[in-house]
Image 1 (cartoon, rainbow, N blue to C red):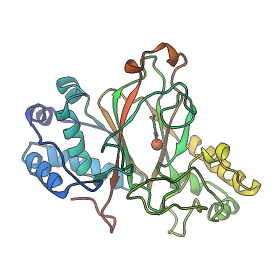
Image 2 (image 1 turned 180 degrees about the horizontal axis):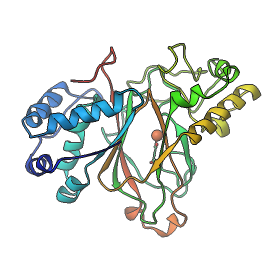
Image 3 (image 1 turned 45 degrees about the horizontal axis):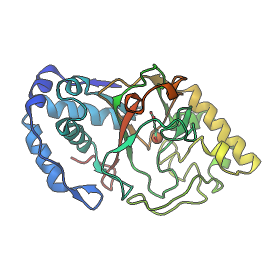
Image 4 (image 1 turned 135 degrees about the vertical axis):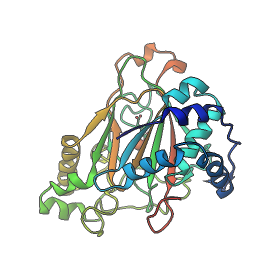
Length: 300
Ligand SMILES: O=C(O)CCC(=O)C(=O)O
Ligand SMILES: [Fe+2]
């Protein structure tokens, strides 16, 4: 689901100077949320665009959206605070922005590191289907990625897949295995706002079919020791996710928002030859997480 910023809205947003944001702990302060909303609700077609965005993320069968901020990025520059404040204001219309990493700023850089595990965040290889912060009892409701620079060599399309649809295509036996607390992944250190460490966890919880998190990362298949039957069921899920995937290339200024209760995400490999690209010219995303207020409603 791609959402363009209407021309009239873009024209006004370019001249709108939002104030710097404030944090309350690791959450965007309610005063900032209110201030940004007051500034923007008067803007023609802002509310309508925000409603389209929320609907794309929460409607039946929905669960992700790409808000196309490329025109704003072009007019303001992606390094400009004004651009990041506008992206933050759109995010705040979906749910409350927060940082689970106490030592990081609200928006976290995801650059390209040629010497990192290629399958992990900021690695150069295939970043398999996953949810972010999978091993917290309360993962972020939304994960969001703002594209500052695409891979200059042309690789790295994003992949998205409807998690509940993939689960529904599995056998009952596999689903029963996925519902057992037999899975674990990664470390849990110095995190905020995502609950406690969950280890081991079930991939499927006892929510009604089609609801709840599908607590999954295909990265566990290679990086966690799992029992044979449980690993096989997880592998089947990974295959179904790929079968149902959509794939697209994020462009400069594209803002991908993923409802982690519905969709899992990942990224195909960057193009070979990243070591020949200067660090400052490599692909760069900014990541921000969102928490929906308890009760499942949107932030507004
Ligand atoms: O590089 C990307 O497009 C995705 C990165 C990602 O999913 C992550 O770092 O969690
Ligand atoms: Fe991710």
